[in-house]
Image 1 (tube, rainbow, N blue to C red):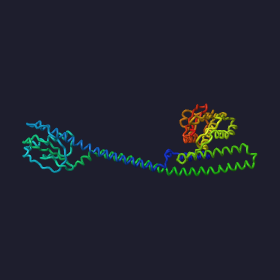
Image 2: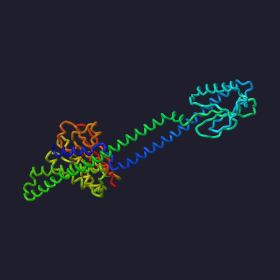
Image 3: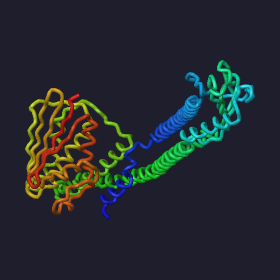
Image 4: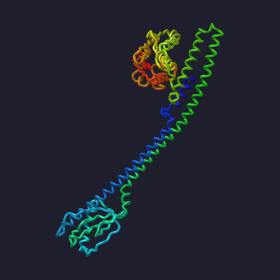
Length: 436
């Protein structure tokens, strides 16, 4: 396994999908999730209380309807039907009873009343046990008992005598509990399910945070350890060329210098991407002359292009073009695009770079005569570890993070990057960077 492959594997470890979330915000996520679960609990309790009230009202309506139907039938049977009766539902425990004889109600008539009432109770789906009583005044309020009252019973001898037909039930809480049991169970199950899933997600995030932090620390230490020998190689090469000037232009010395510089640049790029992923990276913005930096980058590639018999055509304004940004990372963006144009070219590289200045932004176009990118690959080339897979392109060295780095840096400058390409006809990358 080469050094580049080793770094690539390490970076894949720390770049899990979970790492997309800023893991430092887990306490905030925990607070938000707790508030959401608390809100859900309050909503469910409120829903259950509302349901309880509706069930009570529905029960009272059924009792009212059963009583009304009973009285209507009894009035129709009576030889002298009374006028429409005032029906009312109340709660009570303490009442003063009329005797059956005082009201002139015979046992047979009372039995008829109870049988008629029972039939209508069954029709309206009231299966609770109840007792029928006759009262001489309005029911006093109490707990857990209902009484349904009417103004006048059709059996009374004295039509001016007000009597009330009372129906008392058992514990209404038991009835309400029976009716609401499915809703209560479903609410508890839904809440427990959501709470369990939330706990599992948070636990996984906390666990992943620990793993990611360990991997990042290991990766950073490894990357810095790799940079140390690269720095020593570069220093030794510089000292060697100073003490032996005749080897300065030796092709092997130039290869060592070029490859050492490439590897150091790759490691720096991965380190920067790691910092960006973890929210620790900030641009060092300053006002600088963009044209000078583009010319400098192009000059650095002249030796490589001469070896490949290639050329770069640079079209830039004659005047200086100043922008606000991080010159170091923008230079790396230009290096990436030029390096890709050389790397993915089967012929003699021909690269055209054009800079156009607008009132609010500058436009940079990098056009090459490389192998091109298929429409399918164009959708993913700005993602990490995505590389164009055409022919023997896999022989080209790299992490597959160059264009991801380009897109990230350009967007940090509040700019845009786009690509136009035809397979086997070359590619054109356009950068739009604000001047301020």
